Length: 171
Image (tube, rainbow, N blue to C red; front, side, top):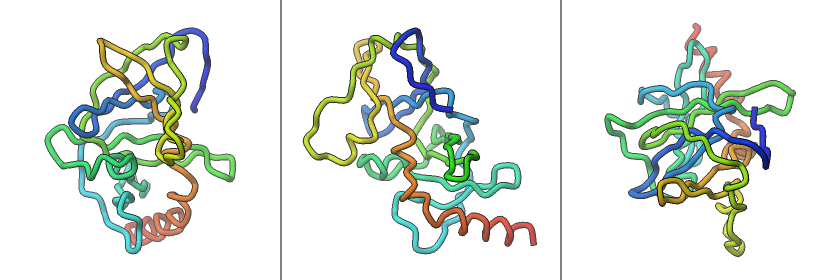
């Protein structure tokens, strides 16, 4: 699960969004990385919720990270990936969520003391999804707070829909 510390080295999976955006997700919440696969659309979902994918018989909701963060929809290419992330659920368990991204780059080790807090951006709601900012090879890496990116509001109602999808798939 997500472990935040200000000492030592932290590891992040880096993702590409938009033309120049490099984002990092704490490696401790990443379960696996999938090649792009068909995503089953669900009715009446927000635009950034793309639907569900089958992960070893489990219907896992997929969020378009580009739309969620304001970069526009992720375009499907040979490099498009779905990063399966573990998030705590209200019942004390773990739920899986897929993050659709344009590409997965690498796992970076960053000195925790070199990670700066997110800059003040007024009342921009999307800034709340930023855990911190670091530099690597002269570029900024925006570190995402996955608990906020994959918020309960986004996932509310998906549990029952994904359960219905799984039941339908099993029938």
